[in-house]
Image (tube, rainbow, N blue to C red; front, side, top):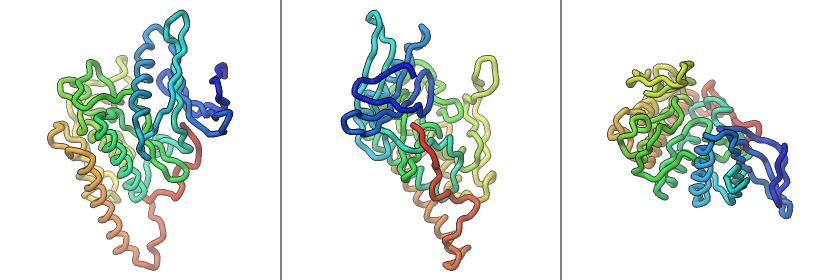
Length: 303
């Protein structure tokens, strides 16, 4: 570690990202812990990472919702009048990302994704779309909290981006084509693709998948996806249909908003609860099946 933050003690590195590192820090007066995102310009073309950090802060500082990670301060470090580094003081989450944990059991998963959808709905109410929902941007705390993180690629509802932004295995078609404005249904697709991975362990076949190619990406037309219930028999048909509807190529054919997604997740949860009660009976209802989540799925610390 070769940096310091005035007024804070820097402890350990929690994670890394594109040109960014996340550190655990504590206020030297109060002892309160925070996560510090540090984005450093390493090359002449790194300006976009600094711009994303600015976007992350500008949106996250407006947030006041239990499922959205808030930012508190930003520090811009310059050398010879040129921006060299950005440090963002953020809410600390004692837990791990969904990607680190791996696919959850169906029961635990529905509760997590209902909260993710509620967080996204709150973001939409502020006029923004996240545009990069994926397992690595969903954190599960050891105390059961759920947090959506990283708003660096977020934008105003109705915005059309000039370049492709998003994560290939979860990206919506309109993010690749860059002709249609991005709106709530873009996040619906990203969430659906994340749900697909969470219940099947497989990536949804998007139009822009990450593959070992010289270009780093593979542009292709829409691929046929296998419904989740055909891969994992523990997935109820109602949940499988929701996931497939979220991932429709045409935004108009997807659920219109997160309120609809939450309603359908609740229906799937009701079906799971009813099936469990019917199959197990009261004597063994507390036992966990192979697809149920552990009571403490995180077991560690991260950003």
